[in-house]
Image 1: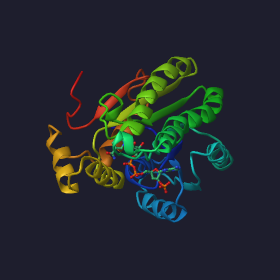
Image 2 (image 1 turned 120 degrees about the vertical axis):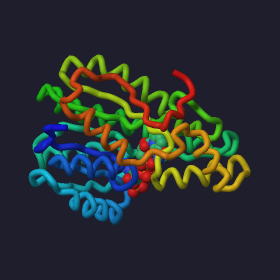
Image 3 (image 1 turned 30 degrees about the vertical axis):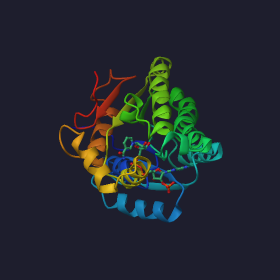
Length: 265
Ligand SMILES: NC(=O)c1ccc[n+]([C@@H]2O[C@H](COP(=O)([O-])OP(=O)(O)OC[C@H]3O[C@@H](n4cnc5c(N)ncnc54)[C@H](OP(=O)(O)O)[C@@H]3O)[C@@H](O)[C@H]2O)c1
C-alpha cells in the first residue's frame, strides 16, 4: 500500500524502546524524519542506530532529544529542536508512559500523580505544543497510544487506567476542534504488548496479587482470545495507516489491538 509519507517529519515520544521504537522504525522506513524523546540518553543513542538500519526510502534523519516529559521544558525543547532542524512537524505520536501497577492501598499518591503527569499531561502538553504549527499549515496527524485499561480497568493498575480513560476523553473532545484545521487525532489502545514494560507490569501485578510472575503471565495469555501478546510492530503498522492519507476521514477514533481481549463493545 502506497502511504506517501516520504519527506514528512514525526515526533515519537518514548521512542527509545518498545512500542515507540517500533513506531519510529516503521516511520523511518517510509522515509519520515523522526525525532525521538526519552530520558536515558544512552538508550536513545542505541535506538537511533537501530532506527537508522531501517533505511528504505529517501534519506530521512533521526534526531534524539534526551529529557523527561514530566517537565514542560522537555516538550518545548523537543518542538523547538524539531522545527529548527526540519522546519515542520507533520506527525506526533504520543507514546511515553510508565505507570506502575500495584495493590491500590499500597500505591502512594505519587504513583497516581506520576502517571497523570507523564501520560495524561505529557500527551496534552505535546498536543498543545505542536498544534499552533500544524494549524498554520492546515495539516497534522496525531496518534495517542492509550491502552485497553482505559475502558477495562483492573484494581492493580489504577494510576495507568485512570490516565488512559482521561486520554480517551481528551482525544475525542479535541478532535472536533482540530478537525477545523485539518488536523486528525486518533487513539490506538493496545492490549498486552510484548515490550520491556509488559515484563515490569507482570512482576508488579504478580507482587500485588501474591502469585508468581509465571502465573501472572499465564493468566494474561489465557485472557487473550487469540492466545498471544500483541507485537509492537503491529501497533506500528496501524500508526502508519493512521498518519497516512489512506483513511482521511478518520478522526477522534479509538482502535483497539488486543487479540480480542476487550470484554465489552
Ligand atoms: N506494553 C503494553 O502491554 C501496553 C499496553 C497498553 C498500553 N501501553 C502503552 O504504550 C506506551 C508504550 O509502552 P511500552 O510498553 O512500549 O513501554 P516501554 O517499553 O517501557 O517504553 C517506554 C518508553 O517511554 C520512555 N519514557 C518513560 N518515562 C519517560 C519520561 N518520564 N519522559 C520521557 N520518556 C519516558 C522510555 O524511555 P526512558 O525510560 O529512557 O525515559 C521508553 O522509551 C505507554 O503509553 C503504555 O502505557 C502499553
